[in-house]
Image (tube, rainbow, N blue to C red; front, top):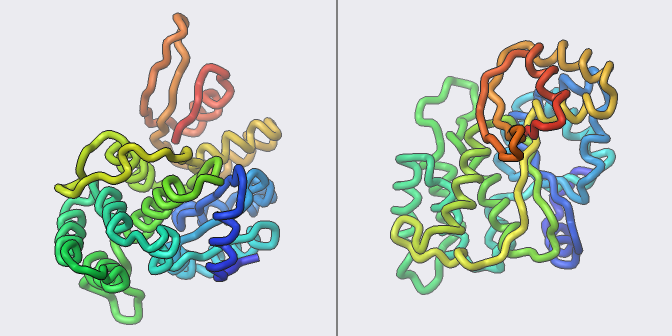
Length: 293
């Protein structure tokens, strides 16, 4: 069922044990629509207790009816919670300055946007009571909002979905001990890069853009990824002949993949490579190769 019941979600996150969370990005929905025309997609989400989608990702999903229908179909089997970014404050136990730091860290690859977020934080830093809602309104309705909008079109927010997903993952990682793992369904290289770099920054750095890093010594759960190629590999493992048929029909272009390869001496090579569909099929047959993204 698709839900907006934030209080119910919060209770589940607080009381849960060994929870497995799935987070779906908008860019994977079109791919899931195509896969669902080939085979039932519901089993792809069997491992997850809860599916989460930030509000801005849902806004992007709602731009296409087939994506809306696909998400509704997933929600027939799994509880899918839509989380408004303004509720992130509640998820963070109202530690709003720490939450703003997570937005700062999550924007480290976004150039000008990172500078604008730091400026927003600076205006709040010395306040007795932080205005998180104002921070969110300014970020999503001004900084991330595209200036030139075609008549009749929705004003898009540059990197809004990726930023929302990255901060949500950080909140779940650091504030909820009952979560075993978080898996992000996306084929957006930026989303992968933002989360990877944010985790490294929060783990390694003493400060983020001049702000003391309060997360450096905090324990956190894992965040992993399932891209479209990862899902195709999963379908191949379940039924090799059918999996190859699906791959040939839906993977029509060469794509970059990130993987590790076990070498003959036992060492591990990490690499990124552009491969076409034929090479991809041979690639996923190898037991020495692990697909990362």
